Structures are given as structure tokens and as C-alpha cells.
Image (cartoon, rainbow, N blue to C red):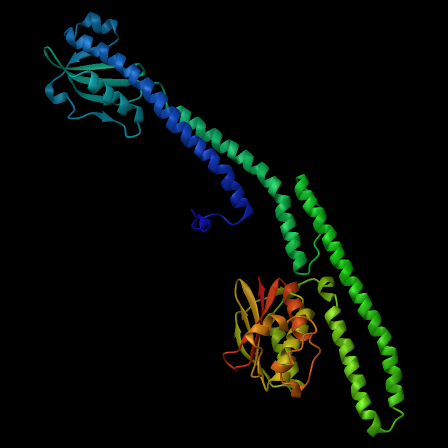
Length: 429
């Protein structure tokens, strides 16, 4: 039997699930005790007590309501008119033990015409006596147990009290787990938050493992950046010598070699951009995404690129790293105008997400190769127009890294408006 349908109704958070695990057994125990103990115990006791009272009532009615006998049995017997007798049994709606009292007395005493339970201390029985209708008053304590609701009150009060105490303790145990989740999520978005392992032994072990993993990743990124920076520095020296040597040659002979040197410099700069670690070194600041994209579009148009800002939806500020977002959007815009004739940029800001979209009218990327296209150093030559210039395969990879560092994702698709590639950077707020 599958219980997948039940998952839609279960809480998704750790606190909600822990509270459900805590409250469900308590409520189940309360119900079991209420049904098994209260129903059986109090109902059985009430039946026994009411049966004893019924025997005494039969004795008094058979004796004709004699005063000495009724006084000896602590019953108050009085004659009443037929009009004073209630038409039916009467009790308060919440007097559940009164149901058992009325049922037992009417079954055991055939002459009873009505039973009235006005309070917790008095029972009035209307019956047919030898000389006419009579009313018999006696204490309610003789027919049912005193204050049966007290058990329910105690169960509810102490159940709620113990649940609150257990919840406070459980919250203290779950707090280190939620803190570890927050720090892990922040590190995934490029922020290194201070964290000290706490809580149970298993949670502390997970916290120390996270700190070790974070330290290894940061050390690896730092080593990669230092290595590529050193390679760049080492390459720039011979490139400078080559440029000096080419300046002494004839312009006709030096022109092809100068283009090769420029390509090598561009490759070195692209490698440094990809390995740059400013995502982890700078913190996010409130930024107006519409103004940021508008400035990028204006700069691109001044550079002679056919780029327009087509749609803007929403307004406000979002915590972003401006330099990283600029680099990612510049790569997307450069790719769009390199492989197409024009590009359109749009921004959509909602309460849950921020979306940057760049569309072009180029050949696009096949659906089965889009996931492969965002990997570093991947160049899809058959799918792109190489006559408009060639990159080194890092533009989409840098954009994807920037999106992931903000807790978002880079999505590639087909532009319904222009027919080319559609690149979306979606960031959750």
C-alpha cells in the first residue's frame, strides 16, 4: 500500500515534523486513556452506584414512601401534582455521566416516569407512588462518581505542559541543525558565515565535517587562483617581448603575428576571469537590478552592439554582488551579439525570484547540448556562427558560476520572440 498521497499533507520543515512526532503520540495516548479508562471505569462505577440507588428506590416505592424508611435511606419523598412532572428526562448537555444514571434508573425502576439532573449535587426522580405521583430527591454523589471531568482537565493541563517543555528541549536540539543548514546554504551562495559546531555528538561531527570541507574548497580555489595568476604573470613577460620584437618588423609581416599575440592575451584574461575568486571575497549589497542592467545595455550600445532593454517587470533592491552579475551579463550579451544580429535583455523581479533574460536571433543551441554548453572550455562550433568571432568556451561557464554563487541557476532555452538562444539567470530571493 502506497502512502505517497500522505506526503502532501505532512509538514516539510524540520520543526514541523519534529513537533508532529512529539504531539501525535501524546494526543494518541490521551485519546486511548480517555476511551479505555474514562469510558470503562467511570461508566462501570456509575452503573454500580446507580444500580444500588435503584434498589433503594424500589424498596421505598414498594413500602408506599414511608417517611421513616426514606429518612433512614436519606431520601426526601414528597407528593406532587401530575402537572409538576416533567414530560421527559432532563440533564445538562455536558453531563455525560448523567446519561448512564438516567438509563440505569429507568431500566431498574419501572415506576419512574422522569429523571431530572439539575446540578452536580442533586437528583430528582419522578415516579408513580401508591397515593399518586411522588418526587424523590437524593444526593448525586450516591449515583455517580464525583467530578469525573477532573481527570480530563488534569490530562489536558499536564499534557500541554509536558508538550511545551518537550518542545523547548527539542528546539534547542534542532537549533544546531538549522544553523548548519543556514551556513551550508550561505556557503553555496558564496558567503562564508561564522560557524561553531554545537548540539549532539552527531550534529557536532557533521559540523566539523562541513568546516573541513569548506576549508578544503577555499584552499583549492585559492591555489587555483594563485596558479593561474602565476601562469598569467609568466606569460605576459614573453608576450611583451614578442610585442617589442614585432614592433621592429615590417607592418605587413608583423600584422598576423600581432593578431596571434592579441589572441593569447585575450585567452589569458579569460582564464583569469574564470578563476577569479571575487565572488567569495566580496559580500552581497542591496542593488537595483533594473538600473544595473540598464547601465550594461547602455554601455553595450555605446560600444556599437545592437542591444535593447525590452521588458522590465517589478521594482526594488536585491542583495547581489554587482561586479559578478555584471561580468555574467556581459558574457551573455557578448555571446548574443557575437552569434546573432541583435539581442534583447529583460528583467523580472517578483517577491520570490529575480530573473535576468538575454535573447538573440542567432542559430541557438540544440536542446540535447545545452547542459554540455555551460561546462568550462566547451565550444559548440557546429551550433554557433564562427564568422562572428570565437570565444574560449568560458562565457556560459562564468555566468553559470555566478548564478550558483547567488543561489540561482542558469537556464538555456529557445527564444520564442527572436528564435535564437534564450539565457536566463534565475535567483531566488
